[in-house]
Amino acid sequence: MAAEIHSRPQTARPVLLNKIEGHSDAVNAAVLIPKEDGVITVSEDRTIRVWLKRDSGQYWPSIYHTVSSPCSCMSYHHDSRRIFIGQDNGAIVEFLISEDFNKMNHVKTYPAHQNRVSDMVFSLESEWVVSTGHDKSVSWMCTQSGSMLGRHYFTAWASCLQYDQETQHAFVGDHSGQITLLKLERQTYSTITTLKGHEGSVGALWWDPVQRLLFSGASDHSVIMWDIGGRKGRTLLLQGHHERVQALRYLQLTRQLVSCSADGGIAVWNMDTQREEAPQWLDSDSCQKCEQPFFWNIKQMWDTKTLGLRQHHCRKCGKAVCGKCSSKRSTFPIMGFEFPVRVCDACFETIKEEDRTPLATFHEGKHNIAHMDMDPSRGLMVTCGSDRIVKIWDMTQVVGCSLATGFSPR
Image 1: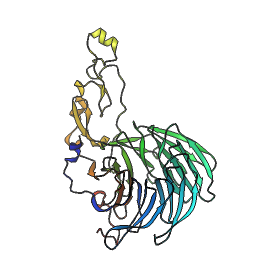
Image 2 (image 1 turned 180 degrees about the vertical axis):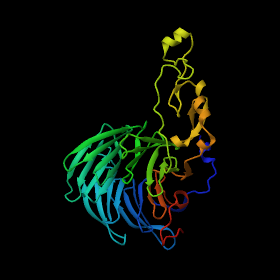
Image 3 (image 1 turned 30 degrees about the vertical axis):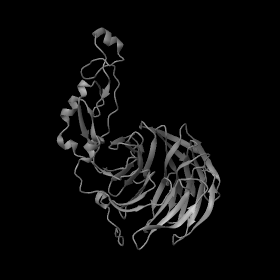
Image 4 (image 1 turned 90 degrees about the horizontal axis):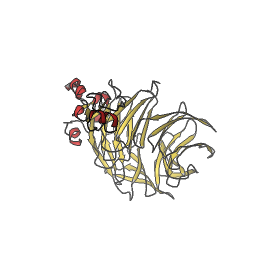
């Protein structure tokens, strides 16, 4: 299956510009500093580091700060230079970084969770820090007073978070595969809806407030686009990864989605095209093509004196079919299937060669990617993961971004 994807000739690809090494444990988050040749990293080794590019072309830490517990995540606000670090002990620590990025001062410590902080967002507009944790909760705290404003508990670990500044809605993904939409207020909240579509834990979310689209990646190797603004429950399934999806970024200007997975896969999806929703799988006691019974249909097996068959589903029409009636495989990118999937024989005949034209490109990051950040104005991407290495990529060939004036890859 992997060979089917990566055998396609690709001229455009990410270009590795730099590798940053020096951490003694997994790097859990890395962000690019806007308008600077710099990267901020947080790690399981309890360090917060600000790396600036020197004249030699190499990155060296201008700030190296150690905290009391492993750093699990961060939220950096560049205009105010405020950085919030989530820790394994449940606390969130706020620092203020100096203008020259050579000093960092402690501001506050927030008792946000009883267990590891999994994700967080800082909102300057509301002066809130919203966070999720392994204590199965989402909390929102006031950054002016340092006090807890509210908390909501889930039945599973809350693993990732996105927040809409304008409407104060929070999207929370959890380990059960659900995404909960909450409306947050100062002292209270309301549950709006629960989105169900993934068959594994949700590992990454990205919210586009312009088109009001939510993207989610999960351990079931899939990405789902939820059309929140359309209010019709429209969802698009994107399947091309072979490991759990752990990072997402939607580029609104070019209508492209970048997703990264645990095996180092980097996918760039063309979302500026008419896509079709994958059908819901139908239930049946017998094949909806040849009418042979499935193995649990004891009555029909007895009446027809036949052995029951295993049930499969056609990815194009959703019908329940047996193996004999679905012996073909095909890509069908318009429904998000970038590698060959099972289709019934009838649907296979309707798929034309042009229908198999890929709507995504796939690339190798060659390391576990647990977190990713992008600066679309410069066409830069930074990736990090459990191999302790941070990689900086030039993505301009892949996503069509133009480099900002004054920046030249070295």
